[in-house]
Length: 559
Image (cartoon, rainbow, N blue to C red; front, side):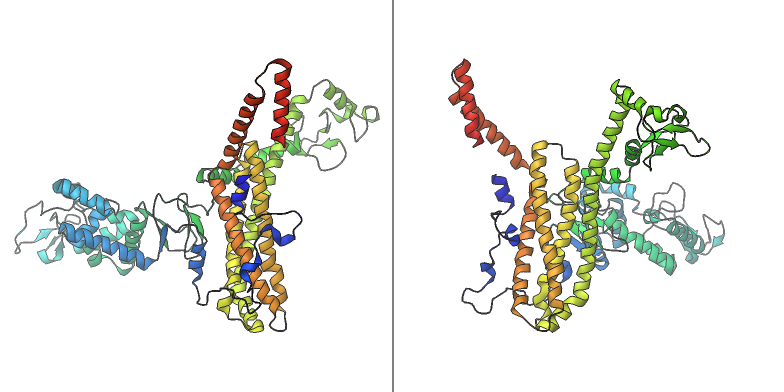
């Protein structure tokens, strides 16, 4: 099949070849033809781990932002709006908060109708109440105490409140949550916004920290192009370029997730399938399937009972204590040697022949088959997840212990042992892909596609096991070696080749599954077209002649 050749990246497979021939990677590319010291092409300089993780993605369409990066972007946006609209940075912040940090939206709305925007957002041109004389005292609108003008504070609207009441008002709203970012004047029905300058002047140190935490989080959470990394304790954000293909992203904390649904990275499976699979794994429906497949209701109290011994004589748990036959569900007092004894039931066999138990048995068999099918896919999904987690532990162990030890034994700089780290990173990525192929397979209905899918999946699993075995088992020999050897150089060559070819195969597998295994449809349509054409050419007659010609055409196609 052409599609198989494409997915295997033109690496031929022959049944008589050795184990490593799965990859069909010719080691001549890695060996010096003159017989001298081979040039392994290892990168000499150290490469940051986060960069290596990102390199495992086919296309980098996102940027990981640290907290200082987020603050810088936020400050740049505020400065841009302030400069273009000729307003203060405090007012620019109020505008951006209202329009969810969309600079273009702010510009469009402002230049379309500045007066309406000012009124909507709460950036007033001037006070809405007369300005009092400096000589007279003012009454606070909250506590109704009188104060000299220097002890009264107000926002653009001019409503007077004392500093004590302002401080309490601001502290209460900050402790009430992110709503403090859209705070309005304490005067009922007054639309004037309270800017950052008031928070900076009156809030306590603790309240200021909370406020600015809300402020920076709003920049990410209100921005359609940004999301926080969902890993526990991680404070990085992802700035994503929408409409550029894959949603899988990798944070600097090494956590990979889907930017669209924030579940763990799940290519080649779409978000809807992932949601279905997660719901199924946690749903009570599987418990009911197990109950239907492995238990029967007590004929008296109707509670489900599991048969855990060989005898057909069942006794329900207290307080029921009803004794009955597991097969026919009739009272055990009607049973004995005459009905088949403890391990058979003549009544059941007779009733089964009459069709008395057909419906119940059919329902139980369907539940059992459904459960077995789900268990098949779930166990392999979970097994690859476990293997992936272990590979992550092994990667950290290799970084912290094994690379240094190998460098000391074989006299090779650690910078030339990156092939080991890269192999583990590739295994971690491939385990993730392979894990989700089982969720893909569970919901794959097409029989023709399913056969091709299972073939590709089996080849992927076989190839990954070879790479995993190489870096996990074969490496151990060189950790206990007494000194340098050429075998270690050959091992590095082999590991580099296996890593590269495994990566290529899995990338092609992901593309094929994301395209819905379209090659199967193409092959099917091509085969159908060929059969139709051949039938028309050879089957132009009628009667027996037509029948014979059609049979001949079928045999030729079969060959």
